[in-house]
Length: 385
Ligand code: NDP
Ligand code: MG
Image 1 (cartoon, rainbow, N blue to C red):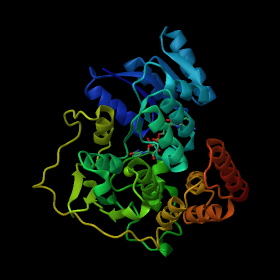
Image 2 (cartoon, rainbow, N blue to C red; image 1 turned 90 degrees about the vertical axis):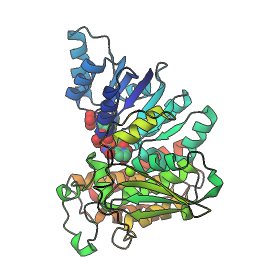
Image 3 (cartoon, rainbow, N blue to C red; image 1 turned 180 degrees about the vertical axis):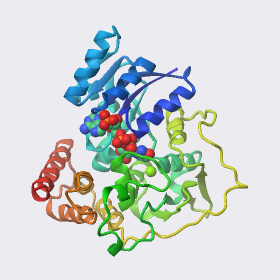
């Protein structure tokens, strides 16, 4: 029996993690679960999985869930705010913490989980982008495993099993290309949130859907791969593969390329991360090679989708530059979703912040939090009139 805590249990990854647990319920128990404001979904989770702790960030949601548990004599302890997230992340009973909150809010709870000796099933890529050095260092010191949930990194993780890291020639990170693949800049000028939220292959939360459309998601994943697999940026290549059947590949020094293939469904990488090194029976439809028509590959168009270029630049510069880039992206995506800025202003704001903010070569955790706050405050003040 594995005891699991989920940070962000009501979101896309959180919900699919619960589906994986439901499919093999004698193998897993839910210890803790957190949400921001979705109290209805949290009440359903409490009724079905009976976790020991739940955390709600939002005031109203916290009071609703707290009252519900009291009125129904439930044993689940309901905790409020960041304190709640941190409790879910570090409680004694959890073996593994699934980090599926969205954005920088995941950083401190992830570090708390690592410092409490929990293995991490990592979906929250922003944490590694903003503070990869600090997070990986803490994981090494505490001897915990960071098990990737992101489908590409889950694939790479499978492709490196049993191989010597020193023999990796390159990582081939696949990308669907998003909803605007093939478009040019003039066609992106008037993109609205509902256009960008329509992903051709994956059904995901809003922030990652916008990131996928700008290719910033792939940029974040390049940085995530750099930290997870200790591979330099010149050895990480993005390949557009619109069918999303190959989830990524690793090329070795002898010319062999090892790939991981499956139907696109996040339940597979989630299940692999929860049970590594064991493999459990399929929770998703199997591939039928007689029905697969064509697998195609293209170079990414970084002149049109400049966020990918900016991410490579930020990653190679290092220090707090990926933090600056990530924070600018988080706030710009929010403003775009609120119809306050235009689509192409997302990349403009990121570039502006990368040029403007003070560069710190070896940032501490406080520097990272300070950078995040300042970047977001600056963008809000300037663009949120
Ligand atoms: P969602 O937006 O669907 O879910 C986010 C979760 O975090 C929800 O439970 C939400 O609660 C909670 N949350 C949001 N804001 C806060 C906050 N301020 N404080 C506390 N909790 C908060 O996101 P996804 O599941 O799509 O993505 C989660 C992470 O996983 C992201 O980092 C993403 O990049 C990564 N990822 C996602 C994939 C996918 O297929 N979805 C694939 C690979 C990686 P509430 O429901 O109450 O709002
Ligand atoms: Mg991915």
